Length: 358
Ligand SMILES: CC(C)(COP(=O)(O)OP(=O)(O)OC[C@H]1O[C@@H](n2cnc3c(N)ncnc32)[C@H](O)[C@@H]1OP(=O)(O)O)[C@@H](O)C(=O)NCCC(=O)NCCS
Image (cartoon, rainbow, N blue to C red; front, side, top):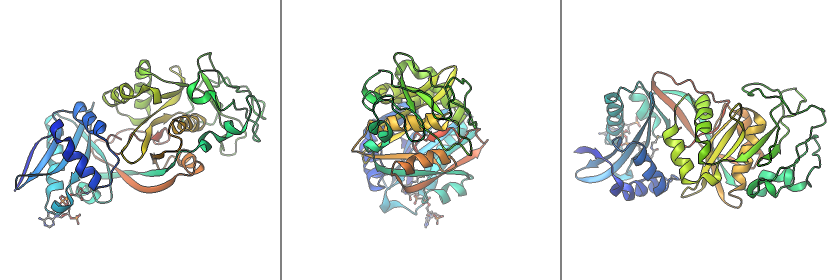
């Protein structure tokens, strides 16, 4: 007999056991965050009195995320997963949430399809070890010198721990870096102004036949950037995720990086510890140069360690970054929706926060 009940912090060991059994990457901190974000929307299923399955929900405005659908391997194929997801949907319906969304594994997808979810797009989980290659162009060059492609990079050292300004002079095209428009789907020149407390970081992008050079100013972020991060994130994901982003920033603001300014968006990246690998993301970028620079900065914080990053397969520039850094595709997820579609833009999503919250 299947029974459902609310999940509490006392169930974290159950959650950890089930996620380890499934080979997932979450930590106790992740479980605590799920409970904090939606204390009334996380559930445990019991079968014959045993705790055997979990799921979590999280309401972001009009969107409810369902995640952590885990059934003990000994109890699968008895309808427990389907009952749990239906329970999560009933919870969201009781809160008048018109859209449910999730990232499905291959095992989960048929369960969700039967419950009315439809596939939207694929995310590739890219995996590898973060190396200094992530910042190789800067590593190889002395401050102020130019790459073959004509871009000047600063000395490697200041990129992570320091707030000195690196050189960011113009590339061979001779263009000045002073455009201020957001680069959504555009190949114009990105902002490259570097204030005193800002890092300058550039990357030459293959700009679809265009020889112009993109570059961007990046800086370390902090909790004071929450409003900017939430606004940029919403432009990319179509979802108000302050609840998630405020917790991620509060947990470790030292791994937040931003490009651009609030009036000239470049993007942001966060990263966090996992039980098997560090997880890069979420990351949003308004130009390929910002995306590459931000992910390089995030990866540089984990040099020598295994990293995961979940990239929409449609975002070719982000996939290219991962491949350039030696990461390979470990598995894929299908983003699915039930109800009103969400106006997100995969060109701007350089890394999902993970399958747990999109
Ligand atoms: C995906 C997962 C949650 C499914 O849980 P589950 O409890 O086995 O799910 P259900 O029993 O509801 O459905 C699974 C299958 O069993 C079948 N089934 C359901 N009740 C059954 C019963 N009484 N007898 C026989 N088969 C049954 C379903 O029809 C379904 O078949 P299908 O996959 O061929 O369509 C589970 O496999 C799991 O934890 N996997 C690892 C983690 C994971 O991938 N989670 C999904 C994240 S998106």
